[in-house]
Amino acid sequence: MPPRKIIHLDLDAFFCAVEELRRPELKGKPFAVGGRPNERGVVASCSYPARACGVRSAMPMANALRLCPGLIVVAPEHGLYGRVSQQVMAILGEYTALIEQISIDEAFLDLTDLPQPGEELARMLQNAIRERLGLPCSLGVASNKLVAKIATDTGKSRSKTGSYPCAVTVVPPGQEAAFLAPLPVQALWGVGPKTAAQLEAMGVRTIGDLAAQPEANLVRHFGVNGHDLWVRARGLDDRPIETERAARSISQEVTFDRDVSDGERLRRVLRSQSETVAARLRAEGLCASTVRLKLRWPDFTTPTRQVSLRRPTDQDGVIYAAAVGLFENLWVAGRPVRLLGVGASKLTPAAHQLGLWDTPDEKERRLLEALDELRARFGEQVVRRGKRTRD
Image (spheres, helix red, strand yellow):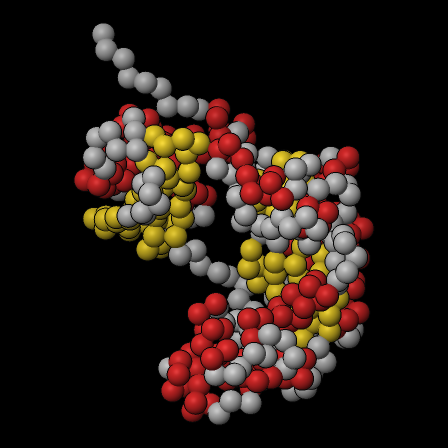
């Protein structure tokens, strides 16, 4: 059996690249996509000139501005990024149906059945995305997902252009272990800061050092994960491309500009979040059996609570009732809240059937379907819940 041709594709600084397409004046300038610094915003993505100043993703925007006083802050347009991501995936779909999208800007492809060499296929994909969408991307080519992903990351980190790396890194079959050997152990999946520190104490600094360790020694130190580390250090990975990835949960949360202690405002936020979560469930044809509430106090303590429903649901009212019930049991009147969120989990495919009688739930369903259609056509704010007034 011939070795597989697995390609990992990563859209370089995706949000920034999309913003430069609609605002060409941003090209070559330090800018970051994310929330405003006075609203506790964080950096979602940053341009390469901004990275040269030390700005990084997930950094508080206030810190980013201190590092780069001339930083331009751009509010994110997640709907736009999602649409562009779909266009990228459509291009990939012209080459193969074996696509595993792992995030809005990353995917694996299995191109084993195509006759061209892996590097040629990678450059074909790169050129198609650049010419048709104007987007830069980097790719790793290898015989498995583990090495292809690390190849992409390595190619990007070695780029010294000061701009989008647009790297293509190829690991020939049989060279997986040799490619990985000089890299730091942190480059390997499953090696976080804690594991890296433990390996450092054992004298293991590179993936090659890790591969040289006896398997029994790693299992003794790390248990089952020790076997996984031993296998990965040799560049072995037989996982297939997963063309369908089941959602484990759907959630919506917000970090407030200023801590909120007004109960009515917090409940309104919960209702809005419940509506958003329910709409996403319906859009994906799913129902949830568990509703989860997440709170964060000003001291960053973050309690969560959850409740199991009597039957799976995708209805706004049911999710809100569960969420607000959890909220009332956890929140003390007047206590400030920094973050508030609603989540739905234990998801199963929706299977609604109309019975002999039109139940209140079914009436609610038809109303929600109509609202979903209006929002899809005219935007989320086309229908707003009104306040109840007394006669």
